[in-house]
Length: 403
Image 1: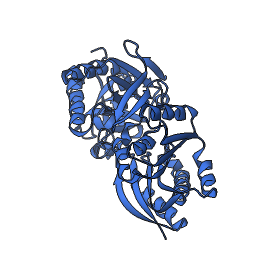
Image 2: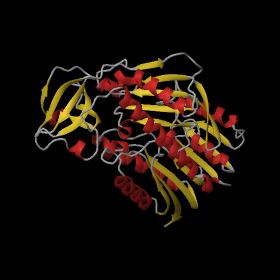
Image 3: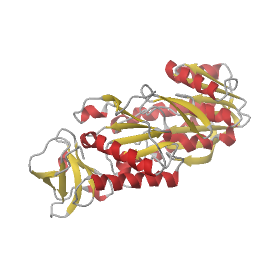
Image 4: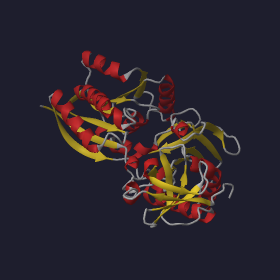
């Protein structure tokens, strides 16, 4: 092990605190702690106890963060190589049982009991993102073990790239980091998902380069897309648009505000021989949809996959307005009997809030909604009961009927 994982201190919680841990989560907040016995620095491991000395587990501490401790084990045990290997093996084997592992998320933070760590596999390349102090210290050990455990299961990894460039690191007191871990390689990676091929730019693309969480939601639109005129909003690198085209859509228009994304989507369309079906436009969706409505455009299938409009509880009300507006615009562009696929990727926008918003949008546009499916993120982004932040993606398909 390269990292020092020795338990450095004993932490006791206040009476009545530790509710997140009791519910199944991994976090201990700064205001829940009664005492810290021992000297610690960011990333050190500590043993956590309830006020009555009942053991709650072992985690790593960060005195600079409001999430003071992130718990990795519910036992008082060493977080050594054997522990990490067992935990990583379980994460890999879970994916092998539940998803297509050619490209998938191998480690999903708290839901895999690696708080603040994301690891994505794109064919034979790994992309790692460490957003917490403890995971930043452990990342090199984790990478070594991941490669060994994948190799045991027949998956050879030719390279690892780090994308620890998210703003969350600043809250932890960490600088942003990007670059190769080990030997350099071409960061433009070819992957296949749902029979669709993509070039993924793991160095310059958003987050780790590609949004794997919508894998099976993209497949879910295939029946509605066949023979359809399709509009894909916030297309990014064209994933929903290309799934619609591959399913046999008559025509697909993908829209994104990023010219880089549009260029990548156009390249991906050509890669699949779909350039005559799927075309892409660089535009602000909030400006384009009213213009399409004014022009009298109508579509058989409209797809809305916006970025998170809220990343905090304080901004939820404004986010609801944004979601309502975009869905009202989308509803107006769907033909009678056509379909709307719509989603939110913010865990603060709960299923209850999203459904209430959709009800309001339908009422305002005099449309009736017939729900086809309600879905979540793909199983390689598991939802850990008790860790609400792990449940973030809500995805719906509706048939739209005139009121």
